[in-house]
Structure formats: structure tokens, C-alpha cells
Image (tube, rainbow, N blue to C red; front, side):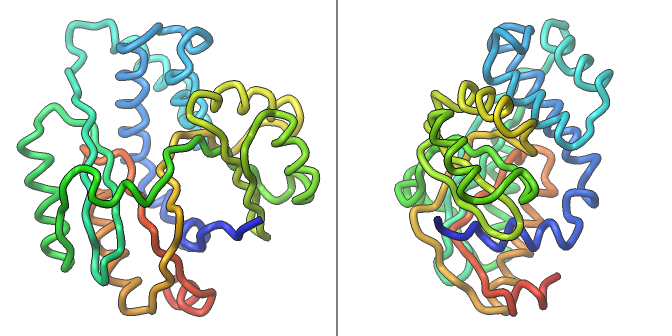
Length: 247
């Protein structure tokens, strides 16, 4: 079992999620509205919506906010969002994938391009970096969910493909198509997960030094601050020493 990216750990230690709480709620609300508009407004009949609601509950989004986001999908004031992916390179050739949801493609493209440029990176063509990633479902559990062996057995029984465990927790991977079913099966075996989502998982990671990590963090922070950006994925990792200096 490979160790999970230290980037997830450094985000946790920095309290990054708390700092961006209101922005996170806004982005999750947008995903819920779009998922409900594209399918059935009943989460039980709409796998994408069910996962979006699960993600919202994982960060303690109030139920009334979730319900409003679902109801907004059927209202006349619901914006028409386009989902778009940008691919590019940060400093030292680190691959970065940006997934956005926008009602103004020109604005979003201009903003994303400027962030890369300001931080020493550059945007590439679609497919320029995504070939180095696998599109998979990821389900995360805290370390207290069980031992690595117990979680591995539960994951395999649920139909998952792989598990990564370390002292911080467990990350279970499966096909995109089976994410909802695997998540439901794991919930019966291990309890409610922290998160279940579709991600770009890097096939390999590049370890970076402190200077490079700081520059990459600046770019990622700028991207995540943008209201149109939903997720930012990369293929870099860092040593415990570098992570400690960034914490």
C-alpha cells in the first residue's frame, strides 16, 4: 500500500479547509444545483447528486442550505454552468489539472491563464497532462476506521480496486462507475466516510523542495480562491521536513 500524498496532510494541518469554509460551501452548492438540474432532484435516484450531498454533509453544510441548492435547480433563476477542464504546468514542470464550473468561459479562461503566468507556470492543451493521471473514485476514511488490513478487506469486499493507508487515514479507490455502490457498501462495513468523490489520481508523483513547494502552493491557493474553480489536482509530493516547514 502506497502512502497518501503529504499534500493532503499539510492542507489539514494548516486548517486550509476551515479558512475557505464559506467558499467551499459556495462551490458545493453550485455542484449540488448542477447535479440536480442534470438529473433527478432526488439524491437516491441521482448518483452524482448523492455524492455532492454527501460531500456537503462531510463539511457540515446545513441541511437547509443543501435543500435550497437542490430546489434552485428547478427555478428560473438557476444559472447555466459549463463544466470545463484546464491542464498546465507549474514551476519545474509539475502537472496541474483545474476543473471549473462557469457561466462565463472567457472570464474563467483569462483568470486561470493569469494565475499560471503569475506563478511561473503555463497552460497547455487539453490532454497535455491528464494522460499522467487516472480518473477514479476516491473514498476517504480516518485512521480510526480500522487497521490497514481490515480496511483493505472491507474495500475489496465492497468492489474497490486499491487502498492507500498511512497514519492519517485510508483512501479507497474504485472505478468512476462503481463509486456510488462501493461507497454505500463501505458505509455498511466501516460507517460513514469522510468524503467520496471522483478525482484525477496521478500515476506517479514528483517530490519537490521547499522553494518549489512554496511557489506551487501560491498557484494552487490562487486557483482555489477563484469562484469558478471547483478542484485543483497536481502530481507533486513533499518530504516530512518540507511539509513541516510549510505547516
